Length: 72
Image (cartoon, rainbow, N blue to C red):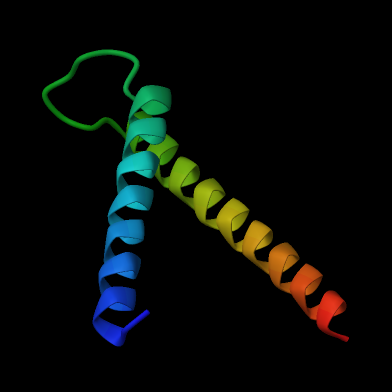
């Protein structure tokens, strides 16, 4: 894989993650139509994004640990 191909892959993966995160948090937090974000909805979005990031980091760390243990 060339450097340009890798950069394109990373960019497309980032777009997928943002789309996935937006869809999941939107479905969870936007339970009623509104013209602006109230504090409850905003807090829901913040918590949802933080959980998503924490989960992603946890999984990535576990995968890295698994790879490292197989290499050693």
